[in-house]
Image: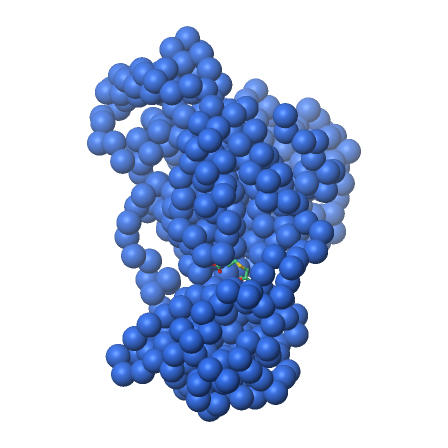
Length: 507
Ligand code: SAH
């Protein structure tokens, strides 16, 4: 049985503050009052009608565009050529007005609210209950973008990019799928099977060339195919061991992002950063099994049992580990536990800290002349001391680059032993903490100074690189993208659009 989880294990994903809450309003059968006659008002009236509302317009001086719009839809758009009064707002759900004077705007807003209407006054955010987003319309799919008034042109640019990524047929696919939900329940009775269907459906909507009249048939085929697959496999879930990289979310692989988005449960280590977790599916349950150094921690056997039990209960378990799971990650034990229990398990590699550290120093781990060999070593045995069985002669090879993981406590002692074993005292050393994170720090020194207890960067995980290849390497400033731009990129990678992004290349 799965052990009961501690309450803090169920904490939802961290959500940054939102300037506004995007909500989608049902206007079917609602009356909307629009005051003003400009082209901008015409555009808003058109939007409100498209969303199902019946719009009454009051305008002294309607623009030709507004008049043309009204002529085109006389049932849902009516015009009265006069200014507004209190009684006009009776029974109105949404009131939109183009009013310049602050006093009149205030009066209009107060009156509308008294009648229970939501208010928007053009270009006067202080009087607005809501704002119109910039939209991408693939009905029934709608994407709405807001910059909270910060930069409307930016909103437009975002819209163009999203327009380019979402195929025009997305709407008809979504519509077809909406009508297919009951039928799907008949064809694929299990919930997990239906989930699988929807994942495949997403891929199909972005890739398939099917015409609109062929879509339903293709959806039906997909459902039947899913059923066959589900029947072939027992209803166990699976474990996907995923490398989270050293901390910067941009160092995740596309596959890792895809798995984070498809997870039911994420079981993660202490080294996984909040920025990485933020990219996971919001509904996924998160379980922290962080190990604190060599002190009190979740025992490895408990973690093995946890992931196996969750998968046996039908869950898709993402076991998220810092760096690359294959490097000092006890991945072998977790894979073995899954095999023993008959749980399907896969591994998605990640960028190991050594690679990211070298990159952040503009350095290389190998060099044709003086580093033909790379060795990763842990300087930490199960009691927290220097492992007895280290091959010191190999580690003292001046022709190798040696990377020490988990070496904070034992680095000085190890350095002294390497010098004793013949490593030249002037051999360069780079000690880098918090690799790829905002607070990355590095110390560039020699093996002799390290043996003399040079002050290591104090906080956070630390990696030590020894060898001539880091002799010239120095930390370069960290540049990274914001999480929101990552999200839009993630959308692309999720659908398998493999086009190189100019922003990725230039940043
Ligand atoms: N699988 C991980 C290593 C896990 S062992 C990987 O491939 O990177 C844990 C050790 O990794 C830490 O003690 C530290 O030495 C190193 N480490 C992990 N993340 C790090 C980071 N962001 N900065 C510096 N060292 C890190």
